[in-house]
Image 1 (cartoon, rainbow, N blue to C red):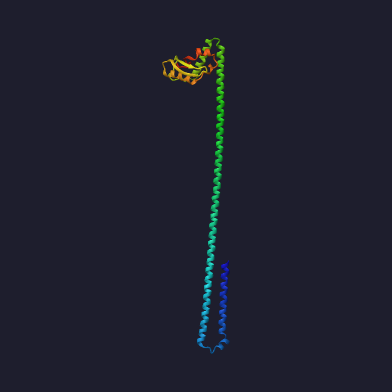
Image 2 (image 1 turned 120 degrees about the vertical axis):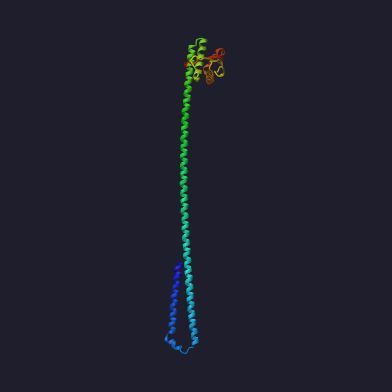
Amino acid sequence: MLAILLHGSVLAALFYFQQADTEVIDIVRAPAVKALLVNENPQARNERVLQQRQAQQERQERQRQEAEQAERERQEEQRRAQEQQAAERRQQEQDRQQAEQQRVAREQRQRELQQREQQREAEQREAEQRRQQELVAEQERRRQEQAQAEARAQQEADARELAETEAELVMAYSAVIHDLVQQYWSRPPSARNGMVVVLRIRMVPTGDVLDVEIVQSSGDFAFDRAAESAVLKVNRFTELQGMDPRLFDRNFRTFLLTFRPQDLLN
């Protein structure tokens, strides 16, 4: 706006000076003045005309310089305006890029939060599943232990009911020991009907097995080792707990087990 006003002022000044020059020339050329200057010295008149022309040239030069200066200022103002517009566009672009980066960062944070939340929920589900599985396994273990305890208690009760004499008790407890060993026995492929192995088992009153050795082999190494391993797997004959100490010392502290499984092949 300032450049436009300045440019208009320069044009108005040029128009004013042009009108003024025309009036001066007309005054010089007026008949009345010509009459007064009839007797004027030609040299002086030429000098005066030359001075007028020089003054006019100087005014025109000043006007040209002022016009050039105004044009330069206008161009400078236009350049500054263009630079300002370019700067504003750059700033706008920077603001847009920054806003875009912030948006992308927000979306990335949201995705990360969602992923962490999903991972946390998955871990919670897995932990709950493991807890449920462990609970079920614990319940099953307790149920089996209770069933085994009930079965052993029933076996002991049956043994006490049937064993009216020491011999009957010994036979009953021997059968219990034989049955427990057979439960833990894994039949080898070479086992055949009629195979028998005699084992010496040393125990303490709690029913814990101290050691076991083969007294009489069946003639089959795998069969003998399977019977020995079954005794070690039983580890404790809890049915012997609570037995009369004298009965235990006489018959079961060192016990000879004749192992003869019932499910051998012919």
